[in-house]
Image (cartoon, rainbow, N blue to C red; front, side, top):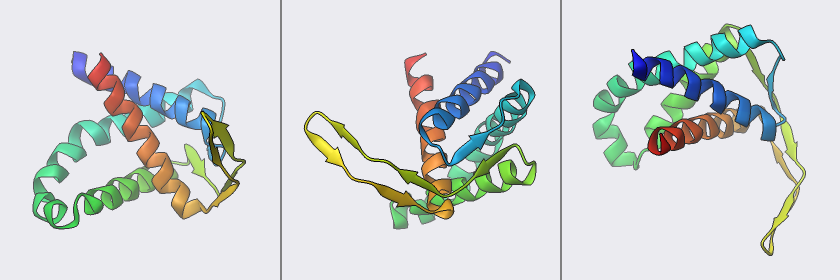
Length: 132
């Protein structure tokens, strides 16, 4: 029970942090929408991801994990777009300069933004699991 509750909290934090930096990842400012989206993402990470790791293991070995990235992004997009909780749109990254490294302006399509958002949410969840 504690693991499920922790996963729901981590999912909500991941959605919030992704919406902060990714302007194409749009979540309405309603706490119920955050809660519903967090419940869906927690269910995916608690139920579907472990089963898919087992089923997709041979393909992940052959493709160095590319199949699982596509699979997780597809699930992420289908569930969140189907329930109209989050909209993922095209986004223009304005660029950044940090520690002498400069990134220019980048236009990210809506399809690419699905992968970016999925990667961001899974990274935040995994980091929070490692830290706490």
